[in-house]
Length: 275
Ligand SMILES: [Zn+2]
Ligand SMILES: [Zn+2]
Image 1 (spheres, helix red, strand yellow):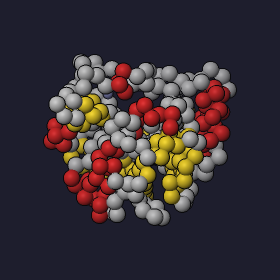
Image 2 (tube, helix red, strand yellow):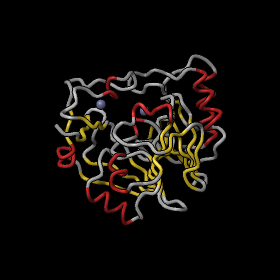
Image 3 (cartoon, helix red, strand yellow):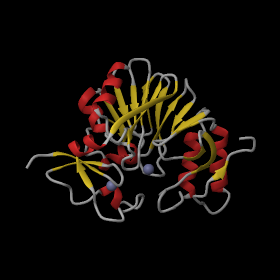
Image 4 (cartoon, helix red, strand yellow):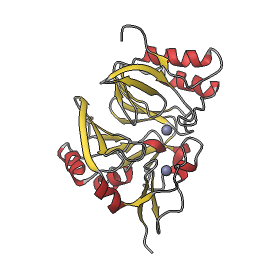
């Protein structure tokens, strides 16, 4: 028996195991759904045969890597140009050779991080291929990181590059983090926010403890989001699934204030008129 990598087709979570793993811990967690028709867990070769690379640049200096057809939750791996080398934040479900070649062409990866387990994707592949010195994840989420090696466990805050800072928000997961790009005015917000898009136009915002099960955050969790995210200036957000602009600090604060005004809920709050 040898240890190899396997991915859950339901959520995309990768596990290193001796044979096809018996279950997926992410799907067993309250924040995700169990697969309706049982486990479908694939080895790396099967995933590689299935998926093609896809990427686009929503703004200069930021590249979004995905895989087609959609696999698991359909995560996006962001590659962000920064002083001292590229920062990769979150991971695509898989990086076929074409995607790795494009990352190499753009200068590789010198620092790597992710908001929480739903955004990890094939982060292990970026570590294997580019061997970045820094792999940063919230220390309270280490239990989910067995497919790769965290080299810099994050407490509350870590500057990954000049103008690119990780902040722990907790909430959705205890170690959940966001990455603030102060120069571009982008909040890589993980699952702290969900954006409803109409084409490419942001229409509504919501926040969740568990998206599929529609469990809201507690008031203390929203207050912590408010204190951390409310202090950051941004005009766009990038979740593990989409890039959305304009979405501003003021609009996100409005969502949190709405949550705190009464019983918390997971309903999407429409963004202001004129959109
Ligand atoms: Zn799963
Ligand atoms: Zn999540």
